Each structure stands twice: as C-alpha cells, then as structure tokens.
Length: 257
Image 1 (cartoon, rainbow, N blue to C red):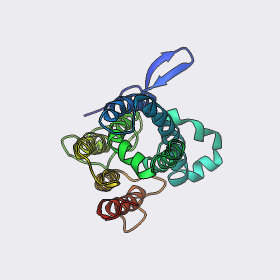
Image 2 (image 1 turned 90 degrees about the vertical axis):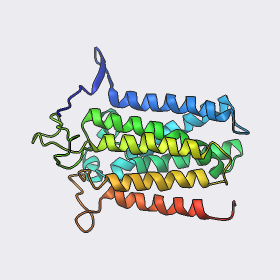
Image 3 (image 1 turned 135 degrees about the vertical axis):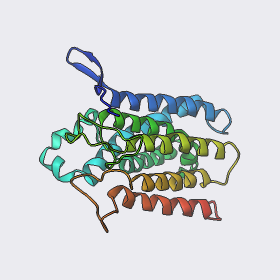
C-alpha cells in the first residue's frame, strides 16, 4: 500500500503545527493522566507531584532526545549546520538519548523531592510506553525510519521520502505496537501489585531493549551509518544492549540499596 499524509496537521498563516509535535503533546498529556491515576494507588504521590514530574520529563525528553540524535546519528551533518539542531519539528529524536535525558531529569526530581532515584523510575516506567507508541506513529506520518524492502503483506510505499517507491516494512508501526501497546500492557499489569524496588524499571529496560533489538532486523539502517558490525548490527542494537544488561541487573539483584 502507499501512504502519504501531509506532515503538517494545521496551518495558520506562517504558523504550522506538525503531526510529529502533536504526537509528543498527546504523549505527555496521556502520560499525565495515567500518572494521576497511578498516583491514587501509590503512597507518597499526588496530582501536583505528577505535574511537576511531567515537566522534568518533558525537558529531559526534548533536550536528551535531540542531543542523542545529533551526537549518535548525524553528528557530522549538524556540526556543519548547528542551527538546524534546533529544528525538532522536522523530526530526528533518539530514544536512547531521550532516555538519558529523562534519567538525568528524574534524578533531579528525586533530589528536589527527597525520593530515591529508583523509586521515581519505578513510578514512571509504566507511563512511558504511551509516549513511545505515539512517537513512532509520528515517525510513520513523517515517513522516516522506515524498514527494509519486502513483499510482506503490510509492505508500505513512502513516496515523500523514498524516491525509489520501494515497498518496505512499516517498521515504525511494528515499534509502535511492541514498544507502545505491548510494553504498556506488560508494565501496567506487572506494576499493579507491589514489587521489589527496581523490578519495574528493570522490566522496562529489558523489554524495550529486546523489542528494539528485534525490530532493527527489519529496519533500514541509517544511510550515513549503515551496519556497524558484521553487516547486520546497527547503532540501535548496540545502544539497546546496555539497556538489556542494566535491566537484567535491576531485575535480578537481591539487595534494594
């Protein structure tokens, strides 16, 4: 099938609102509502604290995600065009960079509120998949990060960004399903009962890392990077391995401190 939606959702004169930005906005709004709901059954949390937490997270996602993309994926380009590093509405956000940014933001929030870092990450982890899934839908609308050529029944043509008009895996939708819906169901169910400190965070890292590692097999590697090892290992897979390792450590450790 062929897919082509204008990436601009709303145009008001010189002001343009992109679907990509709207996906992030919906992700933050949904995360806030889920956070408020989750706070009702989590001791020590209330609506106001969730609002403060989401502000910290928003800064971490935007700054970390963009810096991660600039540094990990297109450093040479943005070194030559530094102003364009600010054009986040054009797409180009790294999950792994965003994760690092969020972790710094959560550490700052924990310090400001007197909470342990791992307690904050355990509270946040089940809220994250919604934003991840919506972000991947934004990638799909932007026709970026598409998959390899295929004759699979779901193969999609992206005419705006792929002049070859090659049917490809809609890998963004695979990620939206796995990293969004499936990961949300797993974490929401797992965190619905009391768990050892760090277990929820560990499960998030393991599941996301595994899902991302698997989808990379059908995702086209970044043209300027290609495969980094053995003609099949991508940057996304290399960045996912530390996540999986840290997640296993958090899930298996016996001590809480």
